[in-house]
Each structure stands twice: as C-alpha cells, then as structure tokens.
Image (cartoon, rainbow, N blue to C red; front, side, top):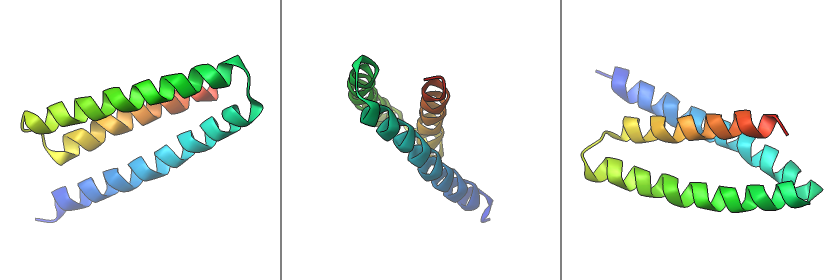
Length: 86
C-alpha cells in the first residue's frame, strides 16, 4: 500500500539532493568566470525551459508524477556528470 508512496518520496528527496550537487558545481564554475561559465549559464537557462516544457507534456499526456520526477533526475545526473568533467 505504501510502496509507491515511499518510492516517490525517496525519488523526490534524491532529486533535491542531486540538484544541490549540480547547483554547487555551477556556483563554483560561475565563480571562476570566463567563457565556460558564460556558456554554462546560457545552457542552464535553455535546459530549464526545455525540461519544464517536457514535464508539462508528460503531465498533459497522463504520465505519473513518478515519471516526471525520474525524467528530472536523469537530466540532473547528466548535468552532474558533464559538470564533473570541467
């Protein structure tokens, strides 16, 4: 009965935790400045707009909130891996 609720709660908690890591990586990059920081700032805004649109489409087509959370987590993890290479 509580299995789905627990999994969704854990996924949301992990999304928050992982997002904080990406925020920290971006703040460090922005603090250094330069062309890489500028490119990341532009990329960040574009990604956020696209991710919000994708989430809206998922919801509009009847996707579960769990699927939306998983979609965001995939994006956050990809950003973390990419930013870790800088």
